[in-house]
Image (cartoon, rainbow, N blue to C red):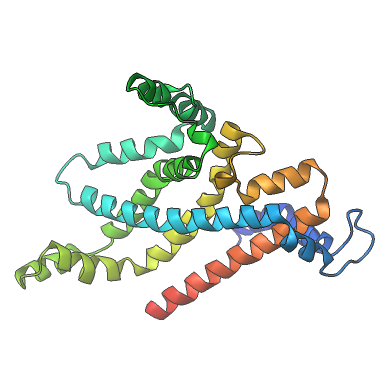
Length: 271
């Protein structure tokens, strides 16, 4: 307890206390002087921009998190089974984490701008160039960017869990005639139940960090398909619409906290 006390004190001062103040201001007017009850929450819920941003954020999480968790697990199992060269694969898949966001944005613009590389290829083939970032394809580009950025990180976490499974279990199952598929479903997956919760939570939290790339490449008002809650909060902050900003932040925090509790309960029952 003594060793983690400085961290707990720092979190309490710089995270918990400011959040408590945000929660208080969500029930006040913009100047923080008059109690308004649930009026701010009603304004947020009736706001069309909030509904659009919330829908896109939920859609992004529903698409990306299962895709990331499953693909990272399969990749980790494949790399873990290699007789040699594991370190090289780990390095290759972890490189996206070291790439600065500005570099990723530059690559996006080079590839997906209407006059970019892919647009010029389409033009050479006799087709009309496509403004990918100005169409519904922008959402899927954001999905690919998230998967590319976080695949290596989740793979390393899965490999840490796989390394804790005894090889004797696999050898015994092989002697009993179990193939690779049966060994995966009856040995690997049950023994990864504990770390699965951690990986899902981290993947959920990391899904909110993709806003940085989206903001840099498309600005404050991107295509509606990739307009996330972070865009909305940033615009509310710019407009000094503090009562909506505080209420929206509390709603988002409550939803995330609720999802984490549900995941914890589900994994607790499975264990």
